[in-house]
Image (cartoon, rainbow, N blue to C red; front, side):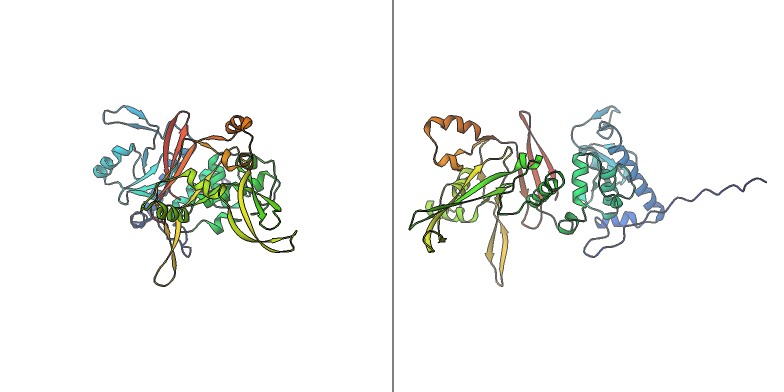
Amino acid sequence: MSTRPTTPASPKNAKVKSPVPGIPMFGCEHVQLLLSQGQEVMNSSIAHYKMILRGIFDSTPIVPQTSTNQEGRPITSLTSNYLCLQCPTTVTEEDRLRHGTKKSHRFYVDSRSGSLYCQICDDLVWDPTLEELRVRKIGTGSFSDFYALENTNGYTAANILSGFWISEKKAFENLVTTREQDAHEFFQFLAEELHERNGDGKRPEIGSEHSCNCIIHQTFYGKMQTTTTCQNCKGTTNTVQSFLDLSLGLDTLMQRKAKKTGQKAPVLTLNDCLDEEYVKFDKCEYRCHSCSSTQQAKRYTSIKRLPNVLSIQLKRFEYKQGRHDRAASKIDHTVQFPLQLNMLPYTNRGRSRDNRETLELERSCMYDLLSVIVHVGEIETGHYVSYCRVGDQTANGKSRM
C-alpha cells in the first residue's frame, strides 16, 4: 500500500517583533507603513532582507561592494554601497536618490554593516525586527536562535561587538535602550569584559593597583601614582592605581584661562589639560600618621607607568544651574592637539629626571596620534565620527551609538 503524499508546508509568515516597554515597534513611521501593507509585503521584505544579509556576510566582500553604473559597467567601491530592500538593485550613494525617485523605492541596506537606511528620513534607522535578524547573522553566521547560545566562536570584531552588545549580563541591562549611548562608556565596558574573559577573571576595581597579563592590560592599562606631602613633617605617602584611560576636565580650566587672559574663548591645548591634571598640585587636608593629626598637605598625581596604547578622554560636559535644578550641557570649546605627544613631563620620572637620560626617556614616552573620536550634536543625542590613521593616510568613518 503506497503512502499518501505529504502536502508541502506553507511558508511561515513573518511577524513583527513583539512590543517591549520603552522600545518602539518600528524603526520609523516609514518602515511601519512598509511592514503594515499586508502579510505578503511583510514576508517578501523580511525574506529579501535575510537574502541581502547573506550576500553581505556570507559572500566575498567584493560582491556587495560592486554596483553597475549607467553605462552598465561594474564598479567596485571602497565606501558603502546600498542594496535596495524592494528590488535586487545595488546602487552607490550618489545613485541612491535617482533610483528611489525612479522606482519609488525608499529602503536600502548598507553593504558593509547590513544596517537599514530610510531614504525619507535620510538616515540609518534602528528597527527592532530587522535589527534582531542582523545581530543574529553577525553573531552566528546564521539566523538560528542567537540568544540561546552561551558564546560565539572566533574573535572577529563583529562577533565580539555584537556578542557583548546583547550580553544579558551587562550591556543588555546597562546600555541597550532607546537612548543613544556614550562611546567612552562602551569602550570601558568592552575593555573590562574582554579582560574578564581573557585575563584573571577579576573585574578591575577603581582606585586599586590591578595587575594582569591579559592582552587588554598589556595594551591599554597604565598606572598612576598620587603623592601626598604633609606640610608639617614633610612626610609623603604614595598610592598607586591602574587606569584604562586618562580623563581630562575642561570646565574649570577653561574658566580659569578665560579669567586670566580676558578672552571669552581662550585657546586650549591638550598639553594645557595634561598640565592641569599631572603637573600642578592642589592643597588638601590630610590625616598624617606621623603627626597623628589632621594637617595641611600638598597632593599631586603623576603617571608611574605608561600604557602601550594611550587613550585620552576630554570631559566635554558641565552642569549649569537652571530654574529648578542643575542641568548638564555640552562644552564645544576647541582643544588643539599635536600629532606627536611627549608624555615624559607627566610621569613621576619626568619630575625628577637626570638631564643625561632625558633624551632616552623622551623617546620611550613619545606617542604618535592614531585616531580621534569626535561627538557631533547635543549632550543627549548626535553622532560619533572617527578619524583613523591607516599607514600614512587618514580615513574617517561615522557610526551612531
